[in-house]
Amino acid sequence: MSKSPVIYIVEDDSMQRELLADHLGKMSGYRIKTFETGEQCLSYLAENTEVPVAIYLDYYLNSIVQDAMDGLDVLTEIKKKHPDCEVVMLSGQDKIEVAVDTMKYGAFDYIVKGESAFYRAEKALYNIYRFARLQKNANLYKTLTITFGISLLLLVILLIILQQAGLISNMPGWS
Image 1 (cartoon, rainbow, N blue to C red):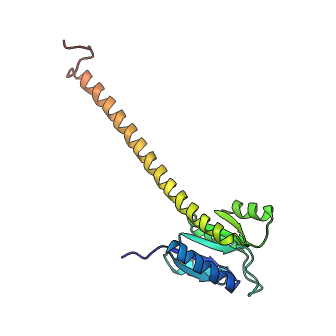
Image 2: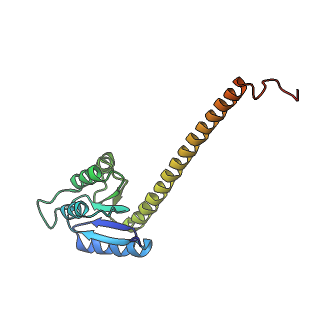
């Protein structure tokens, strides 16, 4: 029996962390695992084989532990070890430079904390699901196209061999 999918939330603000965990848990039905620091999340990822569907990661993680890793450092480490794991960055900053930096390091989305943050977090999870489904379909179509191409090539080779052996004619008609 497989476990249900899991979402990780890395947020140093306990109120924000619990509200987001409650919202995403109810909305998605997924298990939620929360972390206060990036180091806790990275340690948990290293010790367990479970890979989350998504990680919601705060940009600044130093309000509790002053020398804690910041979100970009944690994002970089996550992407090194789990490149397919999607990370959604959360920040109170509404600066385009910060959003561009996070995307450059592999974030799936960037959400500014505010009144629409939970709705955006929901949409990000839906987009992650949709993106994964599109990738799966693209891989299936690629496999089918390659299989069809190889089959067609083998058919042409078989026809050439049969024609060379004199078992089929190259003359059209019923002769």
